[in-house]
Length: 256
Image 1 (cartoon, helix red, strand yellow):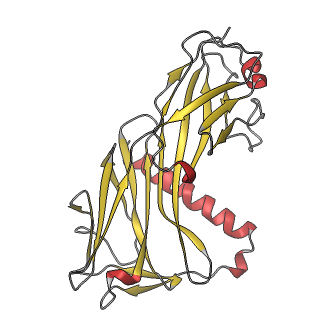
Image 2 (cartoon, rainbow, N blue to C red; image 1 turned 135 degrees about the vertical axis):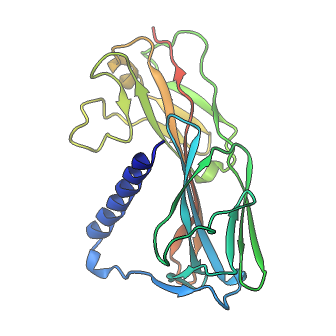
């Protein structure tokens, strides 16, 4: 993924956040204030890690973590030397730009345990060991009957209750397919029947109507998986402190 692609993704994310703010009454939004990390113990802060893996290559976009006071979600902490942050033992703030400047890092994909470490200016450490393992799908080996809902067991979920799934079905036929992420846009011309995921049973269900509307007999299925772990501030405001998004490999389906 080149730098222009990364910048485009960052701009798209920023635009989405701005839209949410405006729709929810932008005038009420209070911009977080930044404070120096000097004198703040690591036990007094909560990080926000956000990692996104590329859809086509084993490359991970890692936005600079936001560090907030545990007692106040609107107080953002700017790490200043000698405080530091490391991911998998590598310091990411050595070449940090101006205070408050957003930074995006490109890292190789991880599959398994990964460690984030925040160190305060007194040497105190917060270590977050998080599992970045991917889910797997139990797809049927025989041709699939379009007249029945297709139920696909999802296995290997490390954080099953904190997982969201969106579905994309690609086709070699122009205008065919399904895209859960584009469904609410005016440009989308495909089927709008929802494909559902049940966290309790860990089952993805593709309705028969979706299968019947596919012109191809050999569609390609891939899923976007989003993991979010939340922290609840004293004012009962919940905010994700860890967000991890990745795509499953392309997997062919065979339809009757």
